[in-house]
Length: 190
Image (cartoon, rainbow, N blue to C red; front, top):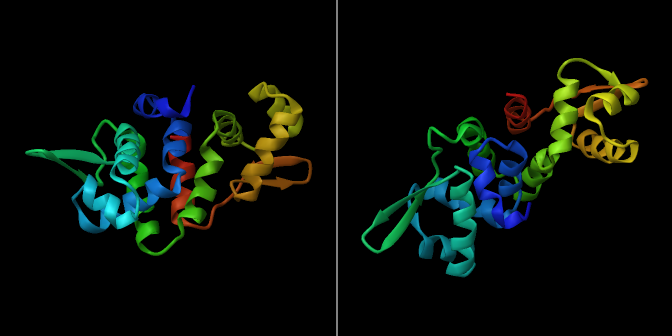
């Protein structure tokens, strides 16, 4: 699936696509500005973030497609608000902690680092498998159907972000230390 089509599947329940939409600095900066000012137009957002209106519009459409922001039309202008529609399951669970992290000064790069643990369907499969208890590499290979090299790559990414830990010859779920990381993990498993 091309990245440009990411807005459609996010509404259908693909958490990895939802995280991929968010794991981009410009979109996080736009979300921060929307959360600070409640409702801003495309032109105002572009100016606040220091990008062109066309670029802002593209990013805003992706955020809207993921159910992360809501557009409001007033005459010829469109304004955006950071609120999750009831149909946007992932956004309603994640948006409060994400905005809190952004507003408290957590850098977009730190947030992206966490989000990228969830931007691939196979990593989510590993986490869901481990949510039922610790497993050896062999057991993970059997439950996920991955090759050993793919499993190794995904485990490295998940371990480096604290979502998976190795205990002897087994892997188990990690205990993330930030509220956003915990919410990401809970949302992934819901």
